[in-house]
Length: 232
Image 1 (cartoon, rainbow, N blue to C red):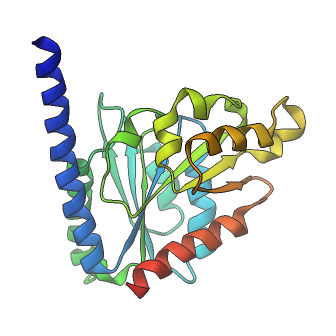
Image 2 (image 1 turned 90 degrees about the vertical axis):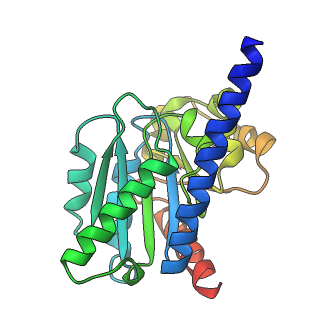
């Protein structure tokens, strides 16, 4: 009986979150905005990747960021230095962003833009930088059009098999910190093979925000996602 109640409660929570995610996605679609949800463990390089992406694409795309962290605005402040609107969400003890939190972030973004005589439809792309965690973020949609998972080569080859939901759900996988590959006993081919056991469709791009390896391929994938929304 207790297990049945827990299962029903979990289903209700996930359904409520899904309803909120669908509403967020409808807002993005009305505004003509593409939303990408970046997920990974802590320290995989999400914020540094975003810094490089914002600086490299700001001449052709108007972008904003919803930045999720359990505490502090350290990462949000780093991204604000790139000259884009950044909405910081502190989750407290929660290990992921959910659709209700992101809805609040969108409301705040609308308000801030109104203060500057702007509107969300002026934007092309919103990045959601999720809380560093390989488990919970993959189960809670936030209204994104695509999920991006990051895996640092320092985390080892087995993480896709140990945390399958994250890698099964990803539309794009970035294998980060490739500049460290010469110093580690890690096989990129094995990482890719392990991912392919779970996910045959995800775009896989090895990258380094330090040497810029693979970033042009990443930018091309981002542009493609934006163009998909524009055409629709």
